[in-house]
Length: 153
Image 1 (spheres, helix red, strand yellow):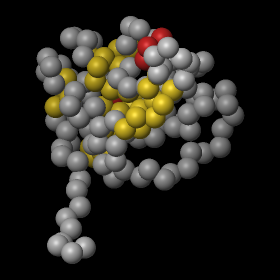
Image 2 (image 1 turned 180 degrees about the vertical axis):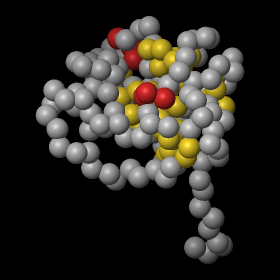
Image 3 (image 1 turned 90 degrees about the vertical axis):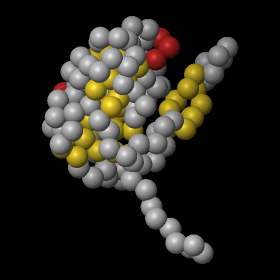
């Protein structure tokens, strides 16, 4: 069990959550495009993605996005478990799609101090609705898993 807090001001951004294993290859259930995407992480739980988070970054001067590697060890949580977190006030620069957020970086901020703490993806074209807390923006995150390799492997 663990609670996550803003690394700048200490405000709780989640209640106590229990860790579950991260399963990136899950297929979402079938749905109509106008239906909300299912939550990737069940309520009351969190999972750590050991791989780099792929962030869509706008290219200045042209209407194009490129994929950039974001941080490793992002913490996936259910949107209903967020507390004291609010949408970034500048939707245009934070990747707001036709129906919701696109994964363009920290589009959710701490309500107390304004630090970007998470990225939410919930636009109609997304297969899952998820929130990723950034490991450098929150405290309480356990270390990301690692692999021990022997010499010569």
